[in-house]
Amino acid sequence: MDGPERSLSVEFVEEPAGALERVDPFLADDPVARNLPATLLPAAIDGGRSIRCWVARDGQRVVGLVLQTDPDRFAMAFADSPAVARRLGDAVGAEASDLPSVRGEVGVVAAFAGAYAAATGRPATAAEAQRLYVLDALRDSDVPGRVRLGTAADKETVARWAEGFVTDTGFGTAGDVTTMLARLAAGDIRVWVDGDVPVAMGMSAPVAYGVSRVGWIYTPLEHRGRGYGGAVTAAVTAEQLAGDATTCMLYAQLGNPTSNRIYRRLGYRAVSEDLGYDFGS
Image (cartoon, rainbow, N blue to C red; front, side):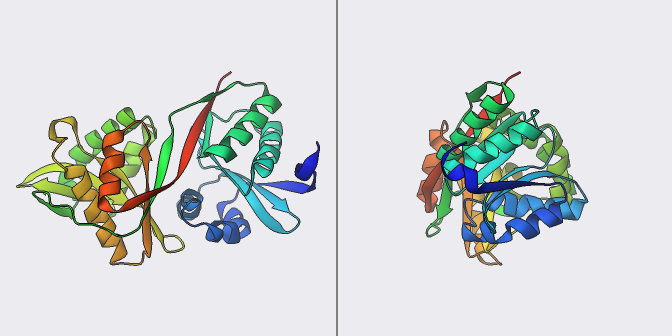
């Protein structure tokens, strides 16, 4: 191994509290781009779940990490440079040849996936990309209806919509339906209603380092084209900014021009692109 990778060390951590303690300064350095591990690690701690986390250091300074919160889910790669990502790919590939996929910022994840594929002999195939947006200034959404708290009466609707979200986007697993129902019971889901009819839903992750991640925005096919998705996005965003969040961010599929246009119209600004790689056998 040549170049800057030679000076990097990689540590494997299974206990989420220990992982969070190690990477906390790294996450705080870029709380928007690193929001996923910043929210998923505390959730794993609260749920008493083990994880798989590889932490890259240059001396004592954390410069990258790879996190997988469930064996069936994608891993997430974050690094200060492609060189760090390649070192992580080598290390993870030597210890865990069973990752189903990985996602991350385009340059970082490409370097990781290439090194991981070489280390494991498993081909890496690029999957659909996402665009990361951060809010500049929220603009009003003038759409008929109102937002309300999701309740137990919405259980069947939320389950159906969560399934639709996973099917339409290709992100998430069947287990996310159960997770969404738990979030419904916790009072985290917001529903946009037109009259008395639920037409769209949205939610946000817990605030981490002042940043709230808005997500699971979903409008069923029969209600699309009327602005409901944008309306619930704006409502969830406004609620978070009125609370503990200093800013909001979200992801949109690059292949969905409608959602990208809506988020820009609301005041979200694109800052980077994320890409996924699936690993074959």
